[in-house]
Image (cartoon, rainbow, N blue to C red):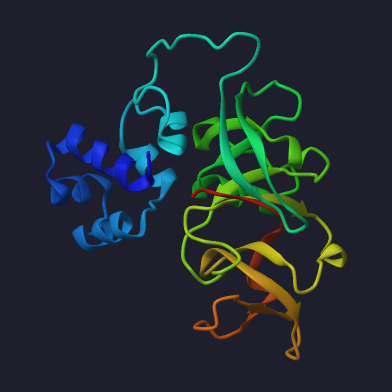
Length: 238
């Protein structure tokens, strides 16, 4: 299922096909919902928080059962697995994206936007209610991934598209920023943004640069930054 198919299934189930009612349920405009459908994307965290009893796995993959607690036939020998197109900054390949338990070795949390404020503090504690699921991705094994989150907005196209999932490694010391590489930045005023970071000519600022040429670079005062994580990988959904 595409993300538009998933949205339409939710609209039909919760609001009998009435898009304006479903938009109201989510707390967004009808135009915003229409844009999601036309662009084949949506805010996973928002939809998951507003649609009671929905399965996070189904919401992310479009596979399996739509609701939590519905038994599925087990797959012999392993966890249930789905295949996606995997892109990294070094190579392109197809890898296994496996649903996992929290305690499984190498399991990475996929979090909603609400959770990532936690990476600004030294303990980085994510509340369980903000975790959409845990996943094992072999290609990320040695990349020091702390969490994954969905991309919103088109400022990093063609490198990153809305709906892509980025793997992030928290930077705990600003000396380890890799200049001109994509980073997830938590800011006081603009929330979460994904930009390339460069040194700024302005004092006590970092220069944020988009890959999309329609967006101009801008300076971020360092005292406005709550946390920074380096983007070390990306999963692109076709």
